[in-house]
Picture 1 (cartoon, rainbow, N blue to C red):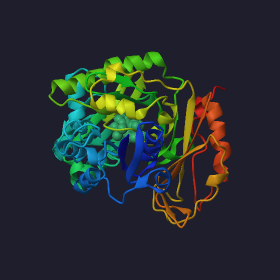
Picture 2 (picture 1 turned 45 degrees about the vertical axis):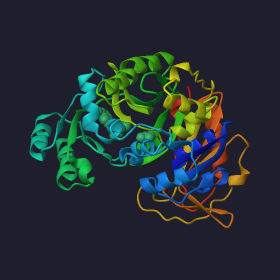
Picture 3 (picture 1 turned 60 degrees about the horizontal axis):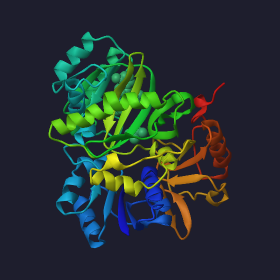
Length: 422
Ligand code: AMP
Ligand code: GLY
């Protein structure tokens, strides 16, 4: 029987804990730091995901058999290297391999050298050169900070002025700190966006079900960017042929490229795609599961996530059969009033025990005190449901959400709506 430690405290991690906990080989799950939802099904440890040394000690003391990392920050800080050095089995790419997410310039360089379809772009470490280049190009144009910027580092600029402001903020004002040491200036692509993630052991690449996420705060993709307001899987415009094509032209070539560069990549490889007239192109790579994609993908995974992860660690993914339910899943994020701007927390959440049995509630910013669950962050819950179709899953989610209440709560009403045939 295995003891598992999940790192992170959002709804992505609650989903991981929920799914890992269904494995018959799991005896105990710890989460650092977790939230009120994970506290109901696992043991929360009051440790930050970037306190690597303390986390390693906690894992050793508790004789953890498998560590699963949710967010990118600990991966980029080298949690996998540290834990491997101590003999603690951990699922995820090491620090160098995480550069596919933590350095957009590095990832783009690989894509260009290995012929992986992506937007044309140039990288700059000098503000003056970047500025001259932007002035000479036609807008719209995309400006990207090289490093991790909490999902805010890519600016789609509709005018040259907007692009120059973005460049100045990133490179001169350094709003993202050293993430702005370099920038990419990139061709603007149009099309539908899809997230495709895969398990890989460095040799075999097994795509998961595709998913779409919604980044804007308000219905109709209006309002400011957020960490994600909902998601659904699978999109009806991205079928098995497209999955195979992206595996063959983007995911496998990327994994082979990493191996060839001496940085074998193991874990979850996430590509954000733009489906252009010339076919799917990679917008970005991430080194982890998606949020809020995970909340609709893992409920569709049949079988044992622990088995898959152990197969990745042992490099025997080719022997695994990974199956997905032939169903759809829709997840809607309930957020605090004011999010993604400033918001208040500490409001009691009511109605969680009044939901239909098949509704899944994954917590993010929540905390428990004396048996009451309170809001404790911007994104508070992801409410998800499966169905035979997106429309059915959508109906289930939206008929249950009004039963949940906390002061100021807001959510999008249109998650998965465009997927419903007219
Ligand atoms: P990224 O941080 O690279 O994932 O980009 C965040 C978002 O910016 C993507 O989900 C797209 O909506 C948009 N984006 C990024 N790169 C481009 C591009 N080259 N053309 C158009 N939109 C882009
Ligand atoms: N849903 C976007 C991400 O996980 O990066």
